[in-house]
Each structure stands twice: as structure tokens, then as C-alpha cells.
Length: 99
Image (tube, rainbow, N blue to C red; front, side, top):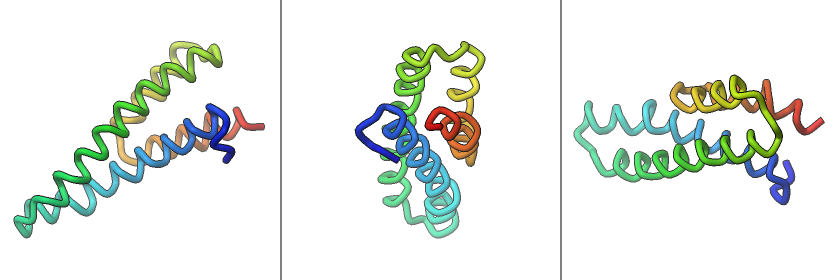
């Protein structure tokens, strides 16, 4: 993954957003609601929120620059709403872009 390219940056962002989503719901939400430890949820929640917004913006920028069809851009944006889905976008769309 070459971070000097927009594809490399987009791939890193997609993976980071997916990891933050999983951390938020699999780790910090149970800590918050089962053990009443709220601070990790606030920190990871803020990080996830920033990564989510960056992913959405970068999807629009990258998809427009690469002349993706609107359906493909829409699916990539929709992927940010489901855990594991940004990993699928990386595997299905972005690996093909790099070839």
C-alpha cells in the first residue's frame, strides 16, 4: 500500500474506519454498558466519528476522480454504516483498482 497515492490513502482510511467501528462496538460499548466505564467509549467514539466523516468525503473525492458509477460510490458510502463492510469495499473494489 503506497501512501503517496490517493488509492493507498483511501485503502488505509477504509481499513482504519472499519477497525475503529469494530473497536467501538465490540470493545468500548460493552465496557460502557456492562461495567460503566465510559471514557474509552468517548475516545474511540470521537476517533471513529472523525474517520467516518473522512471516509465519506474521501469516497466522494476518490470515486469522482476515478469516474466511478454513482452506484459504486453509493455502495462504498453505504459500507461505512455496517461493521466489516469497509473491509469488503477494500477487497472487492480497491484491490482491483491497484492492479
